[in-house]
Image 1: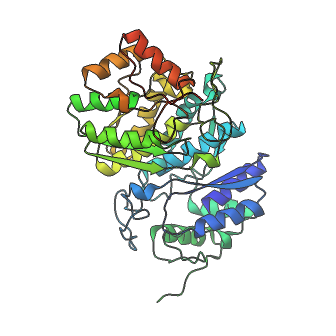
Image 2: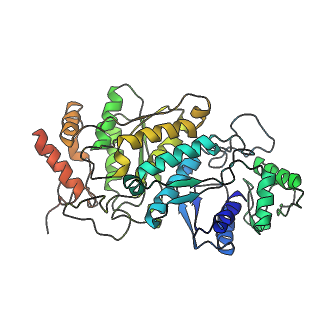
Length: 213
Length: 213
């Protein structure tokens, strides 16, 4: 849902959007299918999925045999994928350079963020500085802007913003362990944060939950 | 050759080394085979190759149908792979975090560097700052060190340092368009910089060149 709202914001600002998903070995591809569909229905110029094999590194419940927790825990949770946002932004940076684009939007969020270090404003600022140096744009002194329009929003704010922009949340997949059709477990951190966001915004939750066993 | 010398330096400094290669869609896998062999013969604890599909982005002679130039050109050459070092360092960062390692070595070089923006000291410094923020180490205030021991060396310096450390340069592959056995073309920028380095160091060039047509 964060990616979908971010795309809607970028479109409203007038950007031509080239949407990127990363197939990194996550537990299911339903979120990639959903991203492809949402990119199309929300006016992206194109959608591309790039593969990177983070299962060969492991270290996360999303990329190894570690189970996804179904109760909240303190500290950085085991669903944290080491360096995932750095890797995804780096791939986005490479594609942006090929496209000649100077702006990258990402849906990271520092409020209801599950305690991930790579969702913090200081991380985004450091990546923007790096991106300006890493590329041809940097050599030419143009720099690269990293936009994180959701970073200071609560999940309820994101729900409201998405509603204003006409995002069909029933098509977005947040669950860490969705089934092949994108039906959510209703138990993991991502499901919990999402459903609390709808409740706090006073918006009916359109999430497709799978039948409990 | 830069990676092999960097590994030898890290080993001399007493580090236990987990060697990473990235299969990003480059023109040949001979450099990956060579890296695997060199990691073993030079005392790395392990060697891992992680795949990331940069051919789906293109934009470089190494990852698309653009021909590898066989004469030097001004500016950033077409062999530059957009954001490649950012992506490779990001994957290394993810693996380092899984391993609990606080030190990443890379063989970038800012002297005989073909004009790549992501080989400059300011790029490495910005990545080190980012890495410190992106990870659990950053949250805990430990930071992450990015070592680039070759960055200020000439290719001749690198040849001499490798010789001192016993690196078998006949097994390293630098050529952008090596054949499947790792035989070099002798014409591309990477071959030219390499052979000039041996000449300047006064060391016989052990590179395996392929037969001219």
